[in-house]
Length: 239
Image 1 (tube, helix red, strand yellow):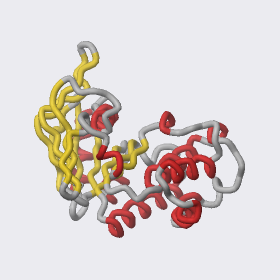
Image 2 (spheres, one colour; image 1 turned 135 degrees about the vertical axis):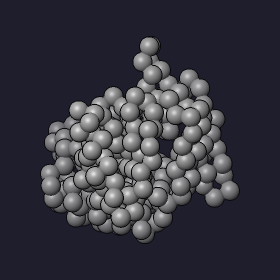
Image 3 (cartoon, helix red, strand yellow; image 1 turned 180 degrees about the vertical axis):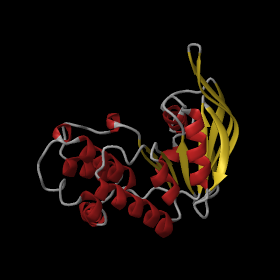
């Protein structure tokens, strides 16, 4: 899955939330998106998922022979899994019911759904399945887990996660890093995450995009973890 962003701009009144001339995301890479609050990370994700409309520009996704503008077709949704915030959840369901709902609308059998959920056993840590607790009554961390697992359930070729380490305890954060790197290795999926946690981002992302004031200031190669010093220096200056 490749993504091409061209002349993409989104404003809210006088505020420019996103202003990206050109940016490419390569097939099968894990890309980290970092920036201070208000940098435009979540807005960029919402534009990529066609949840809001751009003022100008476009986001194109290429998967196999398909090459589509996300604002002109829904074909890309068959390849994409995402979790941005609690608004993605159906909070009057239990986690089991929510996962089965996703499976049903995607023509996944109950057995296949159960088998797929079993692969998330370590990440879920026995706290969510079979507990008959409504999503609305879960802790913030467990809601986060439900959203992430739901995004990955259908094995998408593009996975977009906004602040996936938020609300997770240290053990779950470690499991999250392993889950994402293994998923990328096993499926070749393109993964894009935003995070305020520089260490986690450096640990799992071979490339990191630094975003501020709606613009991607630089793309940093992190193949050998060399981005950490540059990012730490940047954010010390920015503070």
